[in-house]
Amino acid sequence: MTRSDADVVVRLEKATRIYNPGENEVRAISDVDLDVRRGDYLALVGPSGSGKSTVLHTIGCLDRPDQGKVFVEGRDTSQLDANALSRVRNERVGFIFQSFNLIPVFTAYENIEFSLQILGGVSPSEMRDRVGEMLAVLGLEKQRDRRPNQLSGGQQQRVEIGRALVKRPAIILADEPTANLDRKTSEDIIGLMRRMNEEKQATFVFSTHDEHLMRHARRVVRLVDGRVVSDERTP
Ligand SMILES: Nc1ncnc2c1ncn2[C@@H]1O[C@H](COP(=O)(O)OP(=O)(O)OP(=O)(O)O)[C@@H](O)[C@H]1O
Ligand SMILES: [Mg+2]
Image (cartoon, rainbow, N blue to C red; front, side, top):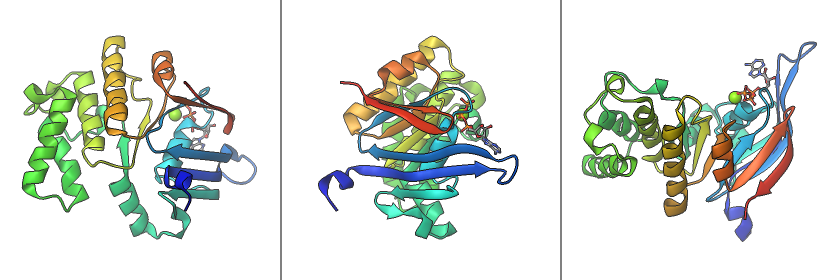
């Protein structure tokens, strides 16, 4: 493996996803080649229906391509059985969904802790340290014992980010992470993700329509009709 290959967290090779094969088929993505590199802060942009969510699901192995390949940290995921694939998803990928996925009867602390319980292999004392550190980074120490319905939208979104990050995954994926937030809150969330990218070299890939978030991205990949039409790094 060359040095530059070791830097690739996820590689898509000619990834194609076809819905409803046959007469009414929809090519959600076509021949997408993409290397996500360690430390990337990458925005997927493009019109509605251009394939952003499909690319994210493919990178995160939530969905398998019909043609082409997905490599996660050099491993060809087409060679993995369902169990091995779900281990990759659980251990190596962090998903930030919109906050509706928080468990309503759990506090902020417990929601983040649960992510480590699922991961397994983390001792209770390490769990306490990691969840505590995460809450501090997120600025949620005072809200640690509140349930989701006692938190604002932005605070819930921060808990969601904490759940993804506490696992220390190789890559964090977010589908429109600021879509339901007001401007101030989305700026806070963008700042938080960017800080984690700079300080911890966390790798982020997100889809967005948000101009502000796009301007903060260090790499912008544009999709049109399921194809990559540009891939630019900002200086
Ligand atoms: N489950 C599905 N069945 C059939 N077609 C689908 C399915 N999911 C997505 N598609 C189609 O695939 C294409 C790409 O969809 P995708 O959700 O990836 O776009 P997107 O860029 O995320 O759009 P948006 O900005 O609206 O979220 C669209 O034409 C969409 O209608
Ligand atoms: Mg989408």
